[in-house]
Amino acid sequence: MAAAVRRKVAEKARKEWARTVVRRLKEEYPDAECALRHEDPFQLAVATVLSAQCTDEMVNKVTPALFRRYPTPEKLARARQATVEKLVKSTGFFRNKAKSIRGLAKKVADDHGGVVPRTMEELLALPGVARKTANVVLGVAYGIAEGIVVDTHVKRITRLLGLTKQTDPVKVERDLVALVDREDWIAISHLLIWHGRKVCTARNPACDRCVLNDRCPSSTA
Image 1 (cartoon, rainbow, N blue to C red):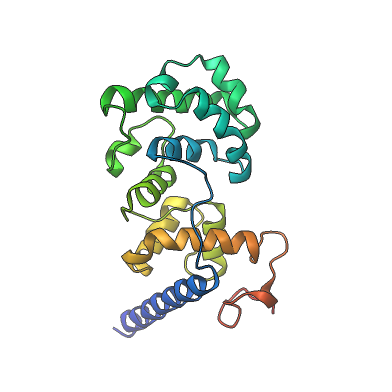
Image 2 (cartoon, rainbow, N blue to C red):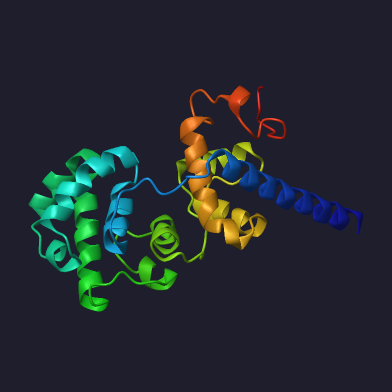
């Protein structure tokens, strides 16, 4: 019984800490948002697939030319593999990415009337789409809080903050949805990504400038 009580107390404390993290980061980064430039859910889905193991900055350099040439799922679905590879080459793993976004476009065009679906199940059925991409599309494009985006920044920082001990993104997401209020599921990923780029960097975290350093278990300040 005592062990169960201790677990409940610890879980309550972690939930309160998660709320504090969100509140402080909202105050620090009131303009935090998705950095991938897009004009519609289709462009966002494609850009997110391209962002795997690539910076958003590089993706934003590639997508304008890609979308000028193939502005709709129907047009990208009919594109030649070699042409798409050339357009997305600088994002890395360009052959697989070109195949994925062409397949994604074809399925959206053929099965969804050219409209990117609004459910997790349907999104996960699209080529190249895993939970990260699906959560980005649902949260950013449609405002639907189905889960929490877990990228490298989110995974790293939530471990540093003691919100999870997991390394697998799916398990990290599971821990976070249990701790974070649903109304903040969309916002928390943007906040942590901005924090990871501006302050809590992987190589040289600026703990002395961090708004969380007084309670962060990993702080060196």
